[in-house]
Amino acid sequence: MSLRDGGDTAVPRAGALECLRDARLRPFWLDSPDAPTARPPLAGEERCDLAVVGGGFTGLWAALLAKERDPSCDVVVLEAVTAGWAASGRNGGFCMATLTHGLSNGVERFPREQRRLEELGLANLDAIQDAVARHAIDCDWQRTGEVNVATEPWQAHTLREEYELMRRFGRDVRLLDRDEIQGEVHSPTYLAALWELDGCAMADPARLAWGLRRACLDLGVRLYEGTPVKRLESEGAAVVLVAPGGRVLARHAVLATNAFKPLLRRARPYIVPVYDYALMTEPLTGAQREAIGWKTRIGLADASNQFHYYRTTDDGRLLWGGYDAVYHYGNRVHPALDARPETFEKLAGQFFTTFPQLEGVRFTHAWGGAIDTCSRFFAFWGTALRRRVAYVLGYTGMGVAESRFGAEVCLDLLSEQETELTRLELVRSRPVPFPPEPLRSAAIQLTRRSLARADECGGHRDLWLRTLDRFGLGFDS
Image 1 (cartoon, rainbow, N blue to C red):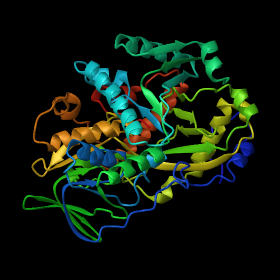
Image 2 (image 1 turned 180 degrees about the horizontal axis):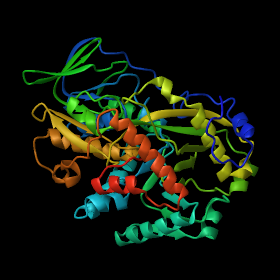
Image 3 (image 1 turned 30 degrees about the vertical axis):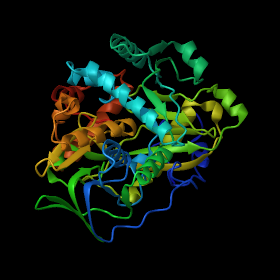
Image 4 (image 1 turned 135 degrees about the horizontal axis):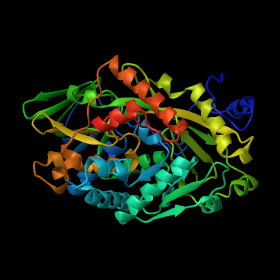
């Protein structure tokens, strides 16, 4: 590794680099003896009522909900690698109730229905918690809430505005001053915080995915792993999904492909794959835990435009991720991009700025993965082949919980009956598409630079960011 852009650090650069020396370039959550044995790939031709492309959270929820709605429904899931291996198994495990990437974003876009969207988001989170209990999914589920911390004065002002907005919507929130947040978690960088008590749970995302996988299999879902779907076709009344080893003919299909190239050309302009990165520490000692005073299991994030998210694990580690959101020209997604030494070094330096009392703690894992980003920052839906195919994309890092809602909407769209969910403006509307290359890459890189400048200039948004705000375009990790 070489430190190319480490940013400000509270320890010598060589110290941050040394703490990464033995880190495994693999997602911590997936590096587990609990990982299930892969199912065989598709071989030959299969027929079913519902075919699901993608074995991540959305695909697994779609399969599970379909079987719970109608136990006689014959469901097949086709997964390119193994269930949960991509975004679902390498995120931070923040299971957030919001369906609109935060209340303020939703109010700006859907002022007439945002109150109902808040209710639906909380009900969705409750339903996930219920499913975890009913299916005995051992995923370290902790309904802790999330704390957003201010590390600059302008961020404290932003958090107060968000607090007042959330109170108007009846949310269970607390505004913490410097002493109060230092009493929860001690960092010399913290000035204030907003604690959303009811809208977030922490989970081990890989174990959650594996638990959903097991629940699907228990209900009779047929799962084929190592089965990338290459084409989507129509044959009479059937939807045809073509894979290297065979094909599946289905009455209906749900496409849950996240950041990977959509099978439907019409969906491609609406998403870009953005790489996010994370580190995991070794288990902290008792003295180290005492030094930072972090006694609960709350999840934290800072209020910068380029923000960090972090949380503890059941064995006393700290996950630290975020900040860089890296786009590769031409929507490139490749396993080689999962490791980015310059970002790992930057994150390590920023970790020790936040927690200088943990100097010398080593990182055991470092990894990255692609997020399906859209311009409004939360999911959108569509149908194809005369409503025999439904898809959902664009979670923009909020898919751990929203994926269940996304799957539920897909099933409603395929039901041929109008429902409360399909009537929502949230579901009927679409984000602004991204421009083609080379304008796409140029716009994204310009936006990243503008967001960094805003963080450095008291939150002031330059002309470029204000223009994006005006036209409903944006960029977020």
